[in-house]
Length: 115
Image 1 (spheres, rainbow, N blue to C red):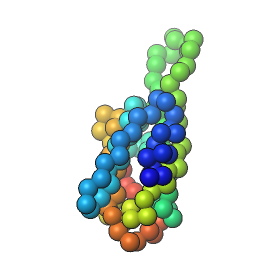
Image 2: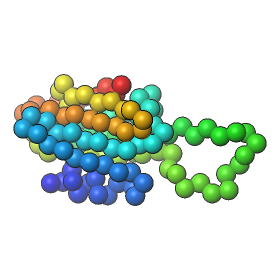
Image 3: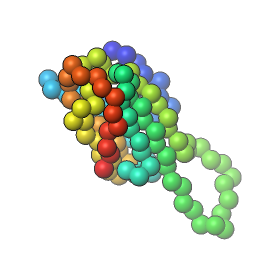
Image 4: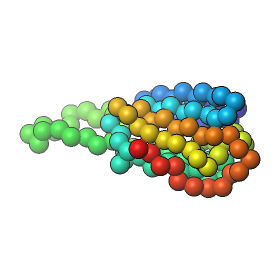
């Protein structure tokens, strides 16, 4: 499946799981530090686009000596032909983004709200 292969190409610091039921796909992605305000998810023409930004806060008297944690994720993933954005649901809790994508014949593009 193309989606499974694409998940393997995400940056090393991004962990993702793909689950499937008879009615939907469930995509779970670890995005430490990201919030509902800093994540944007859209589905269009069979492709899922995830843009996430992590806020970094540190005391002003400190400066970076080494910065290894990525601030942004901009990923575009192919979805199975029967995945749809219609009635899709997304939420993020403690830096874990969960997207439920119902199976359907409709592949109309739309934004998936993340709460």
